[in-house]
Image 1: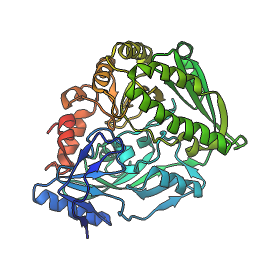
Image 2: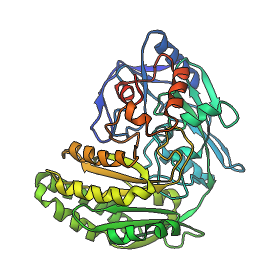
Image 3: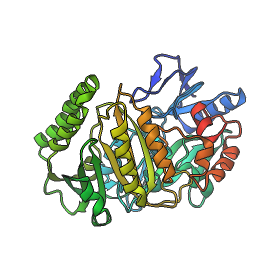
Length: 438
């Protein structure tokens, strides 16, 4: 049976910028329970939104009717070490998945820098890491089990409902409820991480060489400075240079979270200090090299709360976008307290993936909670959209269905499939009505 609970505290996302309530909270224990709940909602004209870990900054997960949580969904975990395939409940977190894979000497080929998301939430919004040879996490999806808006349970793979798989790997939760996901993995591997300060002009001047020479490249630009912090990760055969525990605590816990949080609070209270804080931050992060298990290198703790916008751009547009962003930051009537993150991904063929049909450079802009951000984000969005940018589905943006239809070549195909799988729009909310159409 479908578990229900009386409405208790209102739901909010991790950043605290999205808040809402629901008429009922559904906690299904099986795919059959999910199908039963969906049919009930369809029969009485209701709506269901599935919430994961709340790491999206948009209102994509807000339920204005029934909220479904997958934490109690029980599907069989299957690990095929010979074929390097793992099948897990869609509500499993990436952190739990990484631990499971490590026990079987497997790993995901790439990850982002946060592991708190559920598998379903991560793939449905196009979550990605960095690496010119790697697409978003959804490109690792081999098969899914989906409960559609009519309550039908579909098993989708390259050989069975391939059109649904092509769309549902990045679906925004608009096609149905993901209950099970099969992921293609690789043998467990070790990464060598190298983090170093550099000049932005030098990095941009030799960017193709930098990207081509490493498995994974990203950098952070510190506003009001010409400085960046560059991080490269490369596969190595042995974990022979582990980061000392004290250094990991100092850099990733104390400096990157505790001290940075304090600096942000000071900058919020006295905005005129923000450029100085940014300059000090750029100088405080010194060079370091270390090795470690892949997921432990990819993922780092993030406890300082912020809001974020991220755009995927054609890679060749990156210098122009960053130059415009510098001018935007300098001209704002308020200060920016967070660095700007730049990452790279390979093209893929997923209909609503930001990387559909092209190699991407991603620019992510952030602002500390409680600080003004909308003029900053809107100004950057205008630049990014003009360069062919596609907004990350889990991060703030102001686009609507009409403008997004021109950014995604398969947008109309997705809409047609949505009409077929969810004809009564069981899985919609006001946010989806804006970005996909009512």
